[in-house]
Length: 433
Image 1 (cartoon, rainbow, N blue to C red):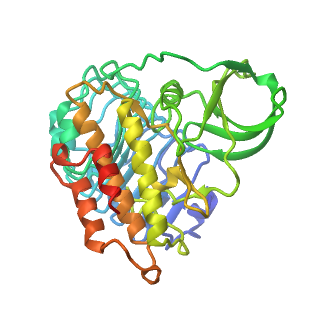
Image 2 (cartoon, helix red, strand yellow; image 1 turned 45 degrees about the vertical axis):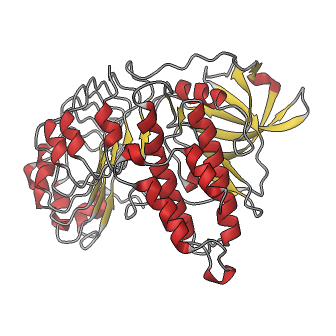
Image 3 (cartoon, rainbow, N blue to C red; image 1 turned 90 degrees about the vertical axis):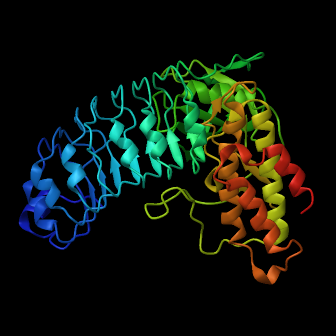
């Protein structure tokens, strides 16, 4: 809920745990400090601010801050003095410098997407609790080796930067599971052998909006000449938290055909705003999201509806399907980067479709990094299996010993990345379930 400056200044918000203001602020309102004894979440996105006062450190209970779409050019060093701060968001500012020792001690979630950073401070390696780090759409040329000390890092977005080399140590981090690194000079380039046919925007009659992701809008449409309904994804045309739309288009085409992938039919041309788009098979309305995205509390793990339950039979069908499609992707050198339940659609028969290639990255399967890149994503699969296993109803009966499931999860999540199973090996193991 949006608050007003008048409410803040009048004292009506005393005792509040959350505060959200977007009213063209050019300076930090000093009245916010009066909320220091209770304030936990502060959202000042969509203003004109460029600095924070020293008094900001008085917000001792503050856990989460958002300053997206402001005018910061330097990351505020005062944040290091906020003892309870765990999540920091400065998306779409103009930050070109993060000083050394600017991060608070309990930092878990850092968002610096779409800024002007060329490098990161070495002291980021002291953020031992860091789990989620979004750096896409900057100018970063090299990651500090000190980041290898971020042993709790699970999700990393470094797409659309200027990295001349994707470091080997990155794919040795013991908990890394979801990583996107496309759109860098040092990333492998995907050269499509065959492209999709182009069809004009005017060939389609747009209907209702079906969904919106980080990279674009998906709408139902009538393909006039073909006399059939399809789905059209129109990309927003700018860098997202995951990467670049053109990388998503290429990977979506390269992924090929699989029963657990949404079919990609063609590409759009002549969009009135010059945007790119994909024409895809229309998913039946009986399919719903398997899970929901992580929240502030879970950080990197999906959340599920309270009513979500599965039988063991459904679980087996689901994990076999996702293992199969993941094996195909990695045979083709595609790291999905976002292997989560919230990117999987499922129907009542446990048929499922893996979608959203916004964080996907192509890699050369013959490269020295290939072995570990796949096994980083295997850990994401292990987390997915663990989450779904926790939702299996005991009353549904078990044909597979619980210990067998735990053993599979352990093989997917062993800290030494290179010793994890490949997806092909997982498919073989699941054949015995």
